[in-house]
Image: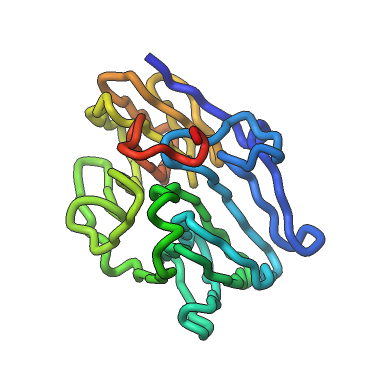
Length: 246
């Protein structure tokens, strides 16, 4: 059984434009020096935020499936596939299937924050495909209300989002009280605490902490403060050889 908490100070760090954009990275690149390395089909995970607003210039990607989730404020996005600037507001979700190559630029507007997460969708196939881009507003995601918990499904059952990466589920929980979740043993559960404070399987999580859970039968969540918890559920092993195992 395993529940591992990685505090913000033990995550990798990055910045753009002389610190105008700051990143803590639950899963950094090998050279970033953070505690948590890539696993499953999850290759990279950054939490980027800015106070004054700033732009990350045009840069290219190939192969990987890259998703962005607007946690706060708004971003503007340009890529060579759509060839226009598009604005995504808080709660929006973006999927870039970078395929055989795409370049893009992002502008984080004032007082904004996003997740950017990279997945390996089977590079042996994705590198042969044309790049694709799609974005989804917060209104399209199904929401389930329970006792003391609200669950938004971003990727998974009844969500319109389609990803090539295998067996990915992404959810956001707003939690007021204690709650439990059944664990699927063939999966890894990756959590980021966006807001609040809670206990996860008896271990304390504070804002911006990251948790990795596998080989547990149930997941126990005890809200100490009203909390927002972001989940990615991914397979322990994929049907294809991932980049990190090649």
